[in-house]
Image (cartoon, rainbow, N blue to C red; front, side, top):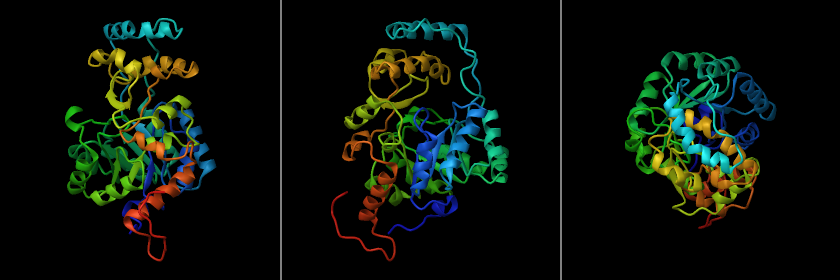
Length: 370
């Protein structure tokens, strides 16, 4: 039986679903649509400067009166050495030439300033602020609380979850190894933190008192039910939203997700310098042997940005970062370009088939997902 959880009541949502913040894919329209459908819509904003971030938040607020989430990467500006850049250029220039781009050059900046972005979140008093790639200090979390924002931290292991709780976070995203896109590990090694969601959620749930949001490979109501049974109070879903009507990603990215098999994804550092899960393509394979020598995030991410833009403009998906979780193959069960409102309704129907209807609600018996 699905009852409003502590997290749902705290955030002010009616469905235990967070639309995952996906850098380069989530938009104000997507976030507002998910919030309007009863979940928590999210916008990945780490690539936005202060003014762009203000405009994006204003657009979300113009589209919904429901709570929404703004996500940032906790990071400091990098200072790549000339040697690191020369090595990266040598690897990337053949691909740039293939796409008709000039040779790579050093960039004026490799990421936006996190501290300036953070100040905008405090200024705008966003309903929910979430963070990954690092740990927000207790003083910054308290500033967000005073501004009226709830704070969600991402954890890929128990130590990270405990750190977020100690610093005052309100909830934790338990990020399983199945998750599409970047893995947010910041304590311990990446390899040691590749814990599957089914093992991770109950261990984090036992270790902290905060509400847990499960993320990793969840694509339908069965996955939501399993996460709730393991101790989560909500789920965060990314790949399922990439194939919706509101998603503005490249058509071939959507197609590759819908055509994916259970073994179609792998983690790679080739695109960004930080391990992220996506559908295997030629770019990954070409640079695979150099994964441990390319510049770390965000330098490699900035250096490959022009390649990805050119690939998008020329319909070359083998040079796009096709981020997707291990459950991507389940997307083919949905109609093509399903609306977010319809997706959310289907998820709740599927969930009720597993957990039973809410009190006072009658449903027809069924043994199949809709």
